Structure formats: structure tokens, C-alpha cells
Length: 335
Image (cartoon, rainbow, N blue to C red; front, side, top):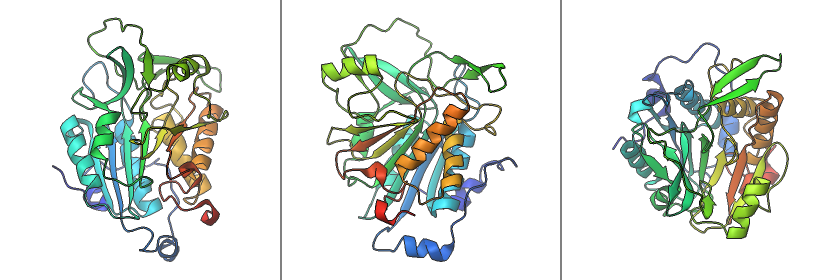
């Protein structure tokens, strides 16, 4: 098992970041001490995963850089001191599980944990039900109920999960840029060698829901894109009803949409990760998750990308999306 390591030491082992990397706001050390007293935030840990070099034909152009830049933002912007970065062939399912175990080990009340994943997702038929899964470098599927089991001892309201992946659609997506030019973009949905037709399913379980929603809700999802308590706009917000869903989960797009990899205008980053990091830079690190994802969705929309980011909140603690992104500071203290 690879232990969590100091962010600066870990990132230095990877290739030098491109010169056009997004500049992110640096926190004033004295302000950082005032914002994160020890009794409120004991430790900041993160596992950051980016997989570009999947076996053919599933290669992606931007996910390793997504991981590098997200880790840089955690260290420079939010003061995270323990960051483990897994890229490409280092991100096997076994390594992913081992490092999640390390991430959540010996947690204390007030710790802040982050799991970031940029890579392929997939919609898998299991027992006549569509389940959304993440795909590791070795082509293994990682289910949300496996993640729930690994994090079962983590108190609710401590873990933020950010997923830049999608679970449906083809390998390529046509897109007309703002100048009217036709572009072909690579999407982030896994395509297995076995192309057998997937049978119609009774239910569809989006990643993070753990258990199927009621059948009527599933039907609403097909027709309306999301179920009843969603907000319409540049992003959507829902509540995860299962008690096993304890993390705040942010995803790059809705279940029926495609997340795309890099565009000419995104500095070698996937569209969602670029938009999220740029929104952090513009809003500052005191923004709430809802504010950040709304700004991220607006940037995607301005670029002509049909991706609606979604934030999924656990039942308790309530209204986590309206607290500080990653920090969960109360909204009244957010500047």
C-alpha cells in the first residue's frame, strides 16, 4: 500500500507542469491560520487520480494533467499537506483501494478529506439494473457501494468527492466552437472490447446513490434528466437519500450527458476540471460548493459544452453544498 505523502514531494516526482498552467490564488499564511483553527480542521488529506493512458482504444489526452493541476490547487490554494497522486498505470483498482484505505485511516473529527478522479466512467448492467462505475487503469470497475464500504467509518460531512468522468455515450462528440468551427472531442466514457447490446433495465443507479431510487423516480430521471428536488440552471443539486451516502459528491455532468476531455481553449485540461479550477481562481477559496459548481457550469455553457455539473449532498449534515468548498465552513463565515 502506498502511504499518503507530502504534496510538494509527491508532485515533484512527476513531470514539470506546463508553463500555461492555470494560476491559482495563494492563501496568506496568517489568514490560513485564522480560517482553519486546529479545533475545527485537524488534517487535510487528498487522493488525486488521473488516468490518460488507458489501453487502446480508451486513451484520453488530459486526465493526468487534471490530477497534477488539482493537486497543485489543493496545496497552494487550500493548504493541503497530505496529497497522494495516482496516474496512469499507478491507478490500478488495487492501488485505488489501498490508497482510499490510507486516506480514511485514523480520521479525527474536523479532518477534511478529498477524493478526485479524472478518467473513464461506465454504465454497467448488473442484475437487470444499470449501475454507474469508475474504471481503473487495468480496466476494472469500481462501484459506489465499494467506496461506501471503504469509507463506512468516516463521519458524514468530512469527505468531498470530485469526479471528472461520464457514464454514457460514444467515444467521440462533435462540437461547434464559438467561431463556428466543427471540432471532434474525446469523451470520458469507457468502451469495452465486448460490445454486446445491454438489455433494458428496470432501474438506473447514478454513482453515489448506492441503492436504486423508486421506480417512479427512475422513470422521471429518463424523461426529465433528474429527479424532483433538482435545481435548474448551470448546475443541478440533489440529495442522496441512502444513509450509506456520506460524502459530498460533485460530478462533471448529468447521467445522460458526456464529459469531454481537453479543448483547444482549456490548456491541456479536461473541460470540467479546467472550468472548476478557473472558477476557484476567480471566486477565491472561500466560495461554497454550490457557488463554485454554478460558476463552473456557466463557464462550460459559455464555451458551448453541453455539460451540466451536479452536486449530490448526503442527508446529513444538511445543506453541505452551501458550505465552503472542501472546507465545509459555515456559510455565514464564507466571504
